[in-house]
Image (cartoon, rainbow, N blue to C red; front, side):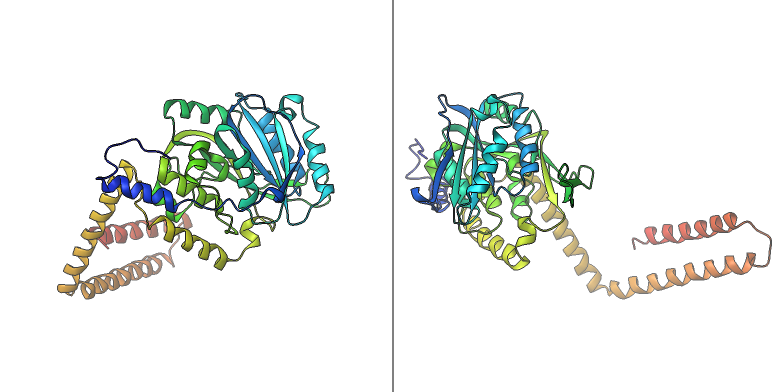
Length: 385
């Protein structure tokens, strides 16, 4: 990436930025012999978006749903690259994927290429397709996830308004599971939409938790190729999160509130969450964090305000704890709590004693007990306990 500025020699910010770009580059992790074309179309024009779908050919039903989502796009300014990834060549799997694609209309099949990639970790097929792409932006869609008909169009509209940044849409989750002995419906939806992802991308928050699944953001292809910020092929898991974070530090992220991505969370084995143990996840996360935090972080104005508020609250709490310690406030608070607990127990017992031998409806007794509990709660609140 080139920066045309006269400040390069004097600005520490620009020097740090250039150093960051250099450190974020990774090896593509494959040779020409690691992949081959098995279904080829000549793509005559440059499209806005390259959609990359990696698959092992084990979820053809789910993959058919994902392809249907692409066929239904309101904006068809994209082409599809399917990458079949296995550790050994599997002609049967390759043929099944090609046959599945050919059940779709020519509007999709004629803008699709299929590759077979043998060997390497999860990032290798992703990098093969990035390297072979010729588009403005690139996005990934796993073979078991879904998108709405506005998916491509929302990415495109965002890029027109804020060119050069990563474009991100909102994602919702749902839980799915495999079904047994049902060839017509081999998977079952087990939940409503789970709105667990943040509306906006925030860099600091994303260091701790990933709110941006792979198909919820598109990255400028030119940035990836010039800066070398391909997918890290040494990672067994979390390669998509690391890939996003390195690229986001360079160009920033523009978020849209539109929900266009649906992430299927499998409740049984088969996903990367179940295939790798906790030590693998935490080890890779720590390794990526070390790299990301060794460079300046790009944060938004909203995050600066949140950090200010968080720090202010932390210091206020620290001052309060110091004051309580100096005045032996902990002992006083503990004694007040004991008294209130004894009062609550006493009131409960008195109410029962008073009415045990008298005719009274159970509902009235419960109401009286609730009144006593509310009194105690108000006392605790007044004492800030």
